[in-house]
Image (cartoon, rainbow, N blue to C red; front, side, top):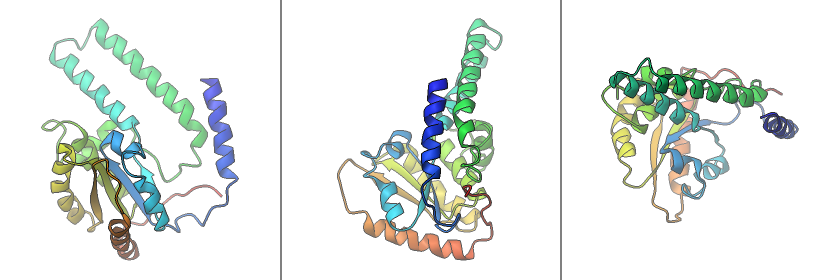
Length: 231
């Protein structure tokens, strides 16, 4: 772990030496969606780079929220099977403790750099925000996380939200039906689902139109963004 921390510190310092534009000068886009598709550039046709080419900054949702979600499901399953107090529960809690300890050790190097980009304290913060759209006790999977995350990102002051998902993805289809209501309930923030089928295509028109909506929203939005990268 110490070698990882040292490597991350070196990477952080290298990034800090790069010249930056004034904090908050670019529209900030929150990215949610199917986990693999949004995190793998080959699967999403490097869509984040396309958005950056049109002047946007992307806040990409990571994989930790899915780990937290599956951990919560483990607790529910143990409880349902009458094993809330068991060796299996004890082993799980030990594993979760180690996960969180390691995550904290790795992320601590970037505390100042991610000021204004703080992640939810736990998965319940996401569940609370998805409650009125897709409650976690009635629905399962990424659709719950993505709807709650969209609300969270709005609260953090993003200027638009994209959902990066594979073509025919059930979670994305369900979310797309819900996003219009989330948008209406949150100042009509632009939310767009982008589907990927493994074939390269020209995304310029889609991205350009979306970024126009983002800039319009940014100019009129009521919830201003706080926090920024350190100088």
